[in-house]
Image (cartoon, rainbow, N blue to C red; front, top):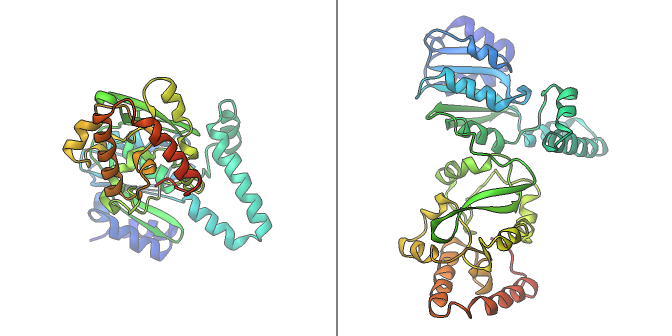
Length: 349
């Protein structure tokens, strides 16, 4: 039987619809759930007794050190136990403000939010000013960032619901935190990719996804699979400008750094993650490892579609061409790719 006092506590802080959804998400009844309303990790440390789930009604947006908070939660839980939290995403924040503000004020709010609440915390020297003014409250957070932070802190996402503009997310502890693996957070990012002979290289790109997106690759694929473009379908990790950058290849420009370092070349198979590499046919994996990856993928030079099967087929043809003519394949394909991009308007998948 659900604890009456806990139900009253929930109703005092949430609407009826939110209480209904929240209680339906709990892995067991409220008597086996510890309730918190906090942004302070110290209060997590004070939780004692037996429980199956830790439920925090405090918004993640008001937690100053989010990773430290989630790591404390991880420490408090046994493997297989649950944490249920809530946050307001950027998308929901702007939807709420759009209803309340006229178009001019809404536009000004958008610009202010983006530069002060989103950019400033990531700029060295301005971060302290940001936290001094805001005290870490009312932070702009995307769904992708919160989910990515949770996964990086050792949790598996079990269930999530968007109720009255607030996301509720239930996660299960599956491991110790792995957040120390240098998550991407700035405008210029370095992604772990498989290079020649299987050597891991850090590929430079302009950010097109929200921070911590790299931790969600498996989750996105399990939920949605691949789209016709060969990229993960319904990918909420993409920023509002990310599609534009990708479409016109702007995010790829920093890969020239990798070319100068001798890790990549101008034309070649795409540098892919370990997870994506597992989905490539075994015979093609062996061919791939014999060559450096490239900035311009074969499907562009060969004028193929960007769907996954077409991309893989183009890579197979390209690699077989390289086997036959290792020195005279890339140059003509480079000029064909430039022609296709400029005159045939070939766009990135």
